[in-house]
Length: 248
Image 1 (cartoon, rainbow, N blue to C red):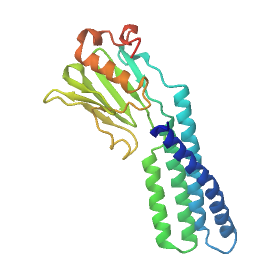
Image 2 (cartoon, one colour):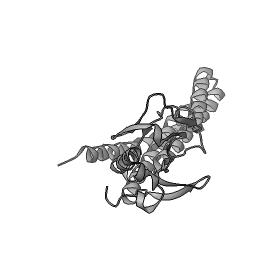
Image 3 (tube, rainbow, N blue to C red):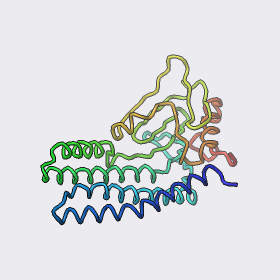
Image 4 (cartoon, rainbow, N blue to C red):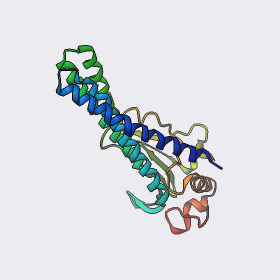
């Protein structure tokens, strides 16, 4: 019996097939008009379709790679010698999104140049502003997938350039689910550092952990974080082999 996940795979791959047919046609049409006497701005939609096609293929490959080789928990030592159990997050999907945004921004800037050459000032201005906006949102070089660090004293989470941390003594309870939500005692506040790409980092809420593509997934994150929040003896051993459960 088909599942929602398998149906989604079929829809995604069907969309890629359609893009694979349409994108080259539109791109070739744009090149023909650019080399002839027509308006070469139509080249931009073709380039955007090609970027979407390449990004879709890359995302499909990333999902397959994640299923075959998911990230695994590791033991690390933070600055200052603090041991931690680290649940890394796979960053391939986020990197692909960044590349797609960069490609689309570059294509729109090219469209702006072509439009200005053709004296289409309004279209050139719109393409230029959209292209610059996509490049800013992409934030190349700051696409940190991050993960979750659990130390004997605190919980640290990072995703897309938003990092927050709270001491275990401030945690009241943990609500499992996607995302996993951490509730604090009244008056307690997390330490938040937003250092990622604009808009992409600000859309993430502190005290929530996106468990999709996180090592161990939602069940592991809920178990380890929940037990550490409620069991001082367990969290005292975080960062040691005993802090990682054998079966979750």
